[in-house]
Image (cartoon, rainbow, N blue to C red; front, side, top):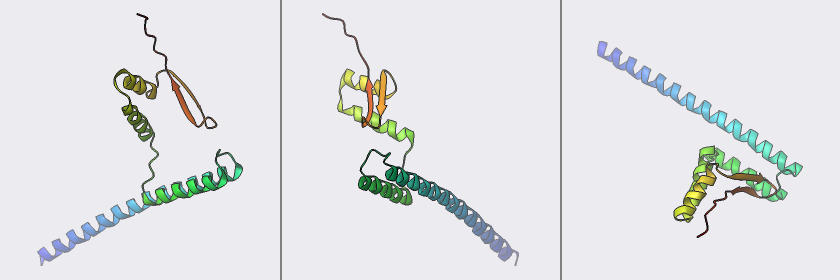
Length: 131
């Protein structure tokens, strides 16, 4: 009889733990979805006001696609990811050019940016003595 009580107690504890973990995961997912919905509304407002520097159709499509990616959990906008992607683009270069590219991405040199310009211009000057 006591073994049945212990088994029932263990089963009840396992069920409670599963319920707690599931509710925590759902709460985190609900928070992420609320953030995604808020971001979507901001993006659509930017589209309507003309502040996106895109035509309205493209802007709305991008906002809808970002919301769909967020719903699937595939939208990752971590700053680390941007830097990793930028550093990977330096792999197209060899030797000193690659080292210089990586240095620019990591913040050396001058940086100019602007949405109107279409991106970020990173510039560094290397002085090489004449021969």
